[in-house]
Image 1 (cartoon, protein in one colour):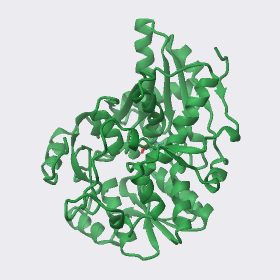
Image 2: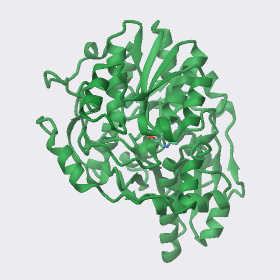
Image 3: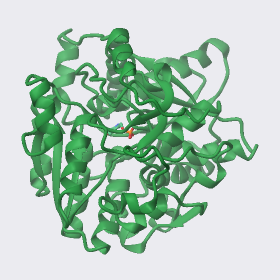
Image 4: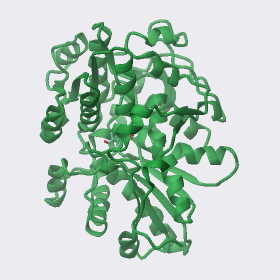
Length: 456
Ligand SMILES: *Cc1c(COP(=O)(O)O)cnc(C)c1O
């Protein structure tokens, strides 16, 4: 067995292609439906907001999609990312399990998000687009896209969920450093934003609402496209570099994953690490357990209904078949802003529905307790989102301690928490609230769901 703390790949060993699970799903993905007609969406429907290359990837039946050399050159600024063996954490837990984490926090914006931001900016630039409009929760996606747009010389407009805009000024500043323009959403710049403000002037905002604003901005400006940081097939596709690299690194460590975990907001980092492993499972080559971890206050996979819903609050996006809490659901203002989304990637939901993936939910305080143990053993301060998966991995390692099983646990360390120190301050001062499952608010939001067939 390899004795290393970190397992590195050389730049030459970076994957040449992303893995597209669509043609290999045991149950085919239900098509997205047009919000007005209820009919399956056609590529033409998406052209006002996405470039052709990304529309093709969204619906592709190719298993492998080559990573353009321009994208690989930029990936090399931080990729291949290291795989760490969490030896100090293992010792602190007294577990016989081996814990590995794939460290996506080494990217310039500090998370996995530039893996897709760079690809999306590249395809839009190639299509002659001058500006990208997007939404951001905690600011991770907005900063990743601002960074990527800067490198390709296009403009970036970010609608940032209002609660995070004020809670996380440093990420807004980071976006400004990379020349992004940032607005607290809902704004009075769009019809969707003005309607939301009229309904509730004190709204904290939500990802769904910010998506409505960004989509409207893109759809109403000729030179502007929209970019989404999670949920869609092409986003998960780009993120598969995480899992593909991790598989090579585990092989170098002469190890094989028994459990793979990721935190789930819209499902892109978990999809990115898990889909290449899901492939082995689908092909009967492994029995790996794939576990998504979400917040108890926004428990999409564990408590949502599997049915068609809009991706945004205003009902402008196509309807997606996913686990949803209802597009009008506004989750409590937890610190893991990146996990406050009412739905999840249709690909992940499909795999949860067919039993290949399971999910689990935790409240904030135990999650931060896990984050501190991690920071005090492994040294890196995790993002509040990432702290959820750390809690999940620790629980699996503690189970091994009870049973004596020497399992290999792999998780995606999706980002660092250097801009989230106020959340740590709240936790250390005992000020963090454990929002339980907001049952009534979710029931109310679910009553607003569109009446479309579930596809099941
Ligand atoms: C955005 C974000 C998430 C959640 O998004 P996914 O699409 O579910 O990955 C998780 N961790 C970090 C650090 C993030 O920035």
